Length: 366
Image (tube, rainbow, N blue to C red):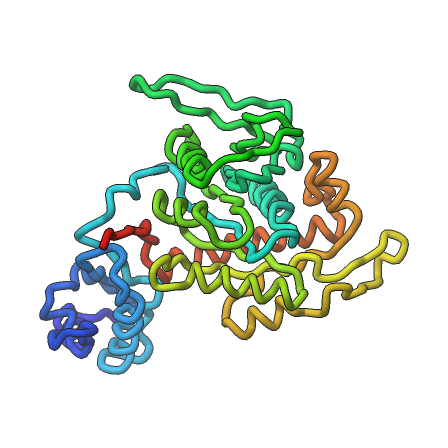
């Protein structure tokens, strides 16, 4: 079975463009129609890459085709979204396929520990990975990756100085910790901190990467705004403990990313410190921060729970010694981080199939 172009267009004529009296066919948004058996695909061309109606038009198109063309038509995942106007800044990091923000609503929930182990686990799975330590005031990643003695080098390209990231455990990385003494405090005003992050993203030779993780500082700040203004973030991973006060702050972080102005997809939630398991009692679980608070929040918000990470001594020791716990192959905590990476990769691929690329945030002056 195959579908004629006329019949496809007739079905899509039932889809009105939100806020207009015309349908998407009348507006000339449909192109490149193809079909093979029950499979059907086509392209919808919007004026802007950040048009907020893209998800609703895509959903309405699928519904119309199943209702007016054939209920067995396989169209999900075959609709390509293109834009007439693509923001020029999206050319930054052209060789990086996915930019993943790792964020938390508050400090002390183990966000950097999760970011480090997630990055190493993804590299172990065979992907090309980079990691930016955007926690300018509390850089910890060089120590956690046993890279404190490394110093990123600089090369001159077309008259401009370009940084070359350090590398540890197969992960390329940059941190302000490479440029200050470990015992020195970073006492900078906001513009200096955001400029440092901007350099890490735009004046660094990251090369070809499948995933570039950005470990953000806790809360919502200038750093977060700088990130979404400079690069198109593929999605965000939110880290929280099961404790209610931590979950309340995690909710704020989720709402920030999902808000209309930022509009970055949330790939899912990580429940860190989900339970305590002592080494001498490996089968015991003690829910010292509450039980399944992250599970319940993920269900409430209809976002994936990417993983539950237990409190075990090896996680703390791994951070202190610079050997991430995920490298302890065969252990329960290593398996937990490996599953987290698998789930993150799955959700990223699904996001890229079902949604258009993220646009950078444009701040308009009033």
